[in-house]
Amino acid sequence: MISELNQTPKALRIHIGVFGDTNAGKSTFINAVTGQEIALTSPVAGTTTDPVFKPMELLPIGPVVFIDTAGLDDTSELGEIRVKKSLQQLDVCDAAVIVVNGENHNKITTDNYIKLVSDKKIPFMIVANEKNGTKLTADFGNMIFVCADLHNESDVEKIKETLIALLKKREADPPLTADLVNDGDTVLLVMPQDIQAPKGRLIMPQVQTIRDLLDNKCTVISVIPQNLKAVLENLKNPPSLVITDSQIFKQVNEAIPDNIRLTSFSVLMAKIKGDIELFIKGAEALDSLSDGDRVLILESCSHHAMDDDIARVKIPNLIRKYTEKNLVIENVSGQNIKNNLSDYKLAVHCGGCMLSRKAMINRQHEFEQAGVPLTNFGVCIAYINGILKRVIY
Image 1: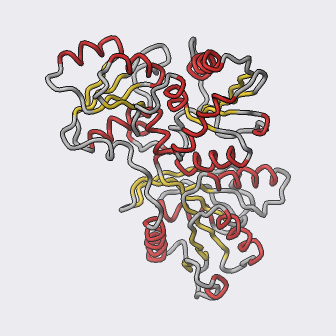
Image 2: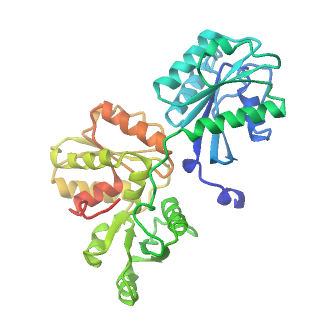
Image 3: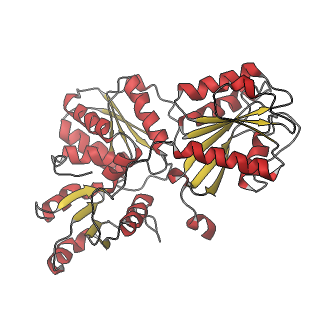
C-alpha cells in the first residue's frame, strides 16, 4: 500500500505502448529498459496475454508507463481476444515502440504496426532485436530505428536515449493551475467530506491540484462548505482563486464575492485531460433535448454507488430539472464503452482522473464522429447553474 501511495498515478504518466509479433522480444524489451524482470518471457508464442503495465521513471522525461501487449499475429484459440485488447491500447498511447525480430523479420506485419500507430498519429520508434549487424536498416528508411541486442547494456542505453529524444518532441500537456495563479497567491479549496469522499484520503483531482498549487508557490487553504463563510471573513486578504467540488458550484458561487475567481476540480480536469472547448460546446446540447432522448453518463472508474451519487442521482436530477424533459438516462462505468453511441443525444463524462489525456482526447473524437455532444461533470453543472461564463480555466 505504501509503495502505491508513493507512486505517480498511472493516468499522469506518459503511456508507451510496445507492439510487435509474438516472440519478437517485446517482454524482453520491457525488462531490459526497466531493469526489472517484470514481464514474463518465454520461447512459447503467446506468453503475453492481457496487456501488462510497468511504471518507471525515465529521466529526464519523468514518470512513464510501458504497456506490454500480445502479438497482433496471435492465431491461438484466444488470439482474437488478445489482439482486440492490444489494439485498444492504441487509444491511450502517447508513444509507441515496435519491436521486430531481427533474425526472423516479418515485413508485412511490421508495416501493419507502422500503419496502425501512424493512423492514430502516435510518434513511434522501431527496435530490431538482434545480436549482430544492422541488416534491417534499409527496411525502415528515415523512420526512427535502433538495432540492438536487448541483453547488451550499451545497446539498451542507446534505446533509452532514442526513446527520450522521441518523447521530448511530444506536445506538452496544458498546465493545471500555473496559468491561473502567481507566486504567493492564496487559493481556497472547498472540499465536501461527505459519504462519497473516500475514508482516510482525498480524491485524486484534489491531491493533484494541491500538489500543483504548491509547486507554483501558492498558499493552499482547504475548507469544508460549512466553514467557507467563516474562513472568508477571517482572511485578511481575499483568496486569489476558489476551487470547489462541482457538486456545490451553486452554493459556492453564491457565497463568494464576484471579484473572486472561481473554478472547480472537474473543470480543471476538463482542461488538462481533453479539449475543454469541446466539453463546453457539448453542454450547449442540454438546450436541445426532447422527451424520450437518451443521455449517457460515463465514469472512467468503477465503484460502488452511494446514496445521492453524483453520476446516478445528482446529475440526472439536475438535467431533468433543467430541461423539464422526460429523458432516458443511462450510466456506464469503466474505460471500455460497449454502448452504441449513436443511440444518444448527449453524453456527460466524469473528470476523467483515471484516464490519460490521450485517452480522453480519443474518447472525445469517438463521440464527435458519432455525432453525439460530450460534456464533463463540472462543465455541465456550471452550465445548468448559469455560471459557466464566470468559471475560469
